[in-house]
Length: 188
Image (cartoon, rainbow, N blue to C red; front, side, top):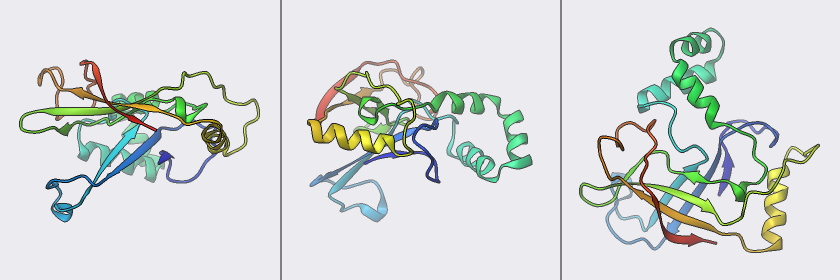
């Protein structure tokens, strides 16, 4: 599933973060969540930003609360959290084609005992699309439908292993990791 980040629908020409959700079926093994220990699915949530704009869930909730409340609360949050504001602004952009964007997990996951991993979906399609001169509000959906009717579309599903816990921390999702991506699957 491909998505936009904004809560309310807005024209596709607006800046936004984009997302990709992948659900795998028939995945055996015990799961970590107590409510789904016996589930046979695995979800991967990816977005077009490589890192999170805040260093903790608590700080993320504060930023969302300020953004949704607006007004004076947003003003005071902005002047006291300039780094978060700058990182947030760098993470949104205009999108010409959802099939030409790279998607990231932002935060790491556990991969066995003592190992962490991040994920990415890298498009096989070369970025060549431009935003139309006068796009319709739903031009990304229209382009997606046209591309999928034209031919199969592919992404490389990649993992990025944590090599050094000091330079690639698990607890600070504002830090981009520098290890290479390794292809483990193809998404069609």
